[in-house]
Image (cartoon, rainbow, N blue to C red; front, side, top):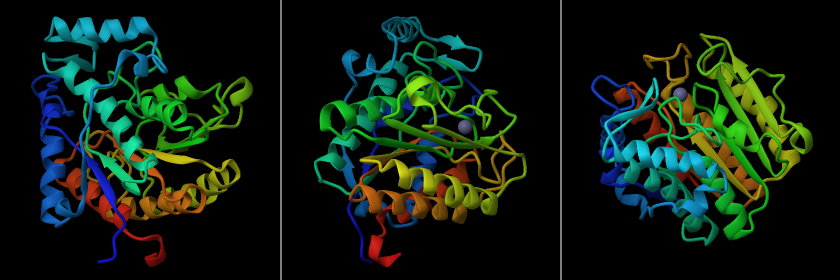
Length: 319
Ligand SMILES: [Zn+2]
C-alpha cells in the first residue's frame, strides 16, 4: 500500500481520567480505538508521537487563567465535578494536560514535516470547553490550544478547524468567534446539546464570516453530511486558504451512537476524511491534525476511527 506518513498520539495516561460509573465518556473508548486499529492492521504503520503536558502558558492562549486554576483545583480534590456532566478523578489533570499537549505535539510533528498528518486518540475531549468554563465532558479545549500553538510556534497563521462531532463545538466557537485567522466549521445535530450552532451564528466583529455552522436535523446521514462538506465547507475553505487543517473528530454522528440521532456510517466518516484531506492537500501540503472528541458506541467508534485513520494514510495521488 502506498502510504503517506501518519502520526498517532496516544498515552495510557488518557485512561486515568474517570468521569464516574456509567459515564459514556469512558476509558474503554480509547481501548476500542486501539483494538480497531490493530484489527485493521494499521497500528504498525503509524508513527508514534509522544504527548507532552501542555504548559499553563500554552493553555492561557485560549483559556482564562482562573479556568485553568479551577480545573486544577477540581482535580486535586477529586472525585469532584465541574458541571453536571463533567466529573474528574485523580488522574484527570494529567490526562487533560497530555490531551492538549498531545494535540500540540502532533502540530509540531506535522509542521516540522516528520509526518504528513496525525490522529490524536486523546481524552478527555475538548470542544465544549469555553474560554472560562468546563462543560459537556470537556476540561480543556485541545483543538483550540493546538490552533494557537500552530500560529504562535510555527507561524501557520490561517487555521481551519473542521468539527464533525455530532454536538456543536460551542467552546471552540466561543474562543475564536472574533478572530478572522481561524475558520471554524461545524456540522452537528440541531437542536441538541449544548443548544448553540444555529446557521445565523457566523462570528463577531473582525471574525464575522469565519464561523460556519451547518445544523443538521435528526436523521441526517451520509448524503446530507457529504453535501454540507462539498457545498459549504469546501468553498469556504478554498476561499480561506488554510496553512493547517485541524479536525475535531467526534464519531457520535454514527448511526449506532446512543446519545445522538444522526445516521453517518463508518464509510461516511472515511468519505468526510477524504474531503478534508483534499482541502489540506490543495492548500497546505497535506498538513492536518485530527483530535478525537466524542463517540460512544464502542465498536462503531473504533471502526470509524480506523476508517478515518486509513483515509488519512492514503496518498493524495491515489484518491
Ligand atoms: Zn459529541
